[in-house]
Structure formats: C-alpha cells, structure tokens
Image (cartoon, rainbow, N blue to C red; front, side, top):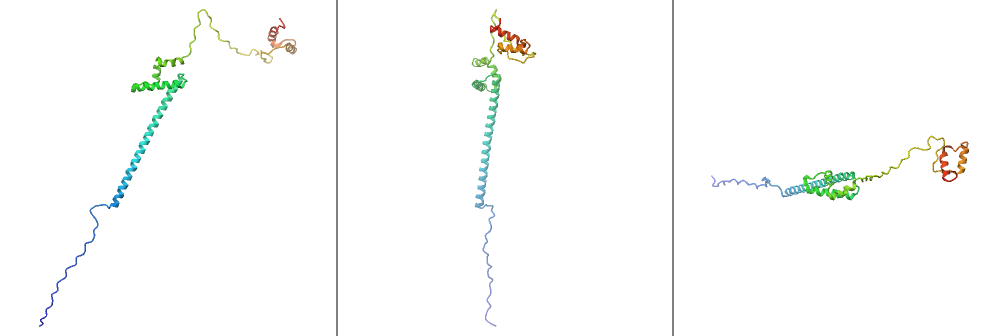
Length: 208
C-alpha cells in the first residue's frame, strides 16, 4: 500500500460575464432630434404669424376700398341732384356738399338725408342767394294804360305756291328790260309777278 495520497481537486469558480450596454428606455429624446423639432415648431409659428398679418392687411385694404366706393357713390348722387336743380357751377355744388357734411356731423344719427337738408335750407340766408339765382326770371306786368308788345308774327307758307311760274325770291330787282322780256313771254302780260314789278317801278319813280 502506497503512502502517496491523491490530491483533491477543487472546482474552479465560474467566470462572470461583463455587463453589456443596454439601450436607454427612460423615454428621453436625442438632442439632435429635439433641436430639429423645436426648429420646425418655430418655423410653423412664423409662417402662421406671417399669414395672419397678410390677412389683416387684406382686410384693411378691403375696408378702405369699400369706404372709398361708398363715398364716391354718395358724392355722385349729391352731384346729380344738384345738377338736376340747375347748379352748374362746380364750386357751388362743392359748397353745398361740404356744408351738408358739416351739418351731418353735428346732427349725428339724426342727420337728415341730403335732399331733405337741401330743401329745408332754401330759406337760410347763407344758401338762399344760390337758390335765387336758379329761379326763373319773372316778367313785369304792363303798366295800366299801356299795350303789351305783340309777339312777332311768324310767316308760314310759300307766297308763290300754286303759281305756274317758277319760284323767284321776292328780293329780285326787276329792271325795265326784265319786264319787257317777261311781257314777251306772257303774251304782253306781266305774269305772276305783276304786283311786285309795279311796286318796284313805283318805288323807282318810273311810273306813278
């Protein structure tokens, strides 16, 4: 029997694996992605603000255009009414429109329409002078014992109508030679112009 003893083998301790890097699972966003989202949000807000500003400018322009159109229509209506009353001078029409505008501002909501205000202003000393110029001139009645001048008579018709001779203007001067030729054509008679010929010969003293 041998004195040698078999050594006892002790098991080696198991190797411990190195911990591996685990992905972040706490809900955080990478900084680059966060900066990108912030930039997009700011750009969207800037676009929205620019659009709102543009809309506000367009609304202001529309309001101004509507106000200008309304003023133009009002002015044209007043101008047509004044011209219909006979006010041909532009300065007079402008005077009435400005006076009405001032009166309307003083009266506020109770201001009358332009036509009504104009009618009620005829007796006002400031405006009556303009209305008096538009009134037709009055004819003075003839004084007692006088005769009103007769209107000039209007000559109607052709004094030579119905005659067989051609129409000759009555201002023609008939000479003795003309009368002789006329008598030769009319078998010794003076023809249709007999009275005119005789009147001219008497006026010349040729016959009495």
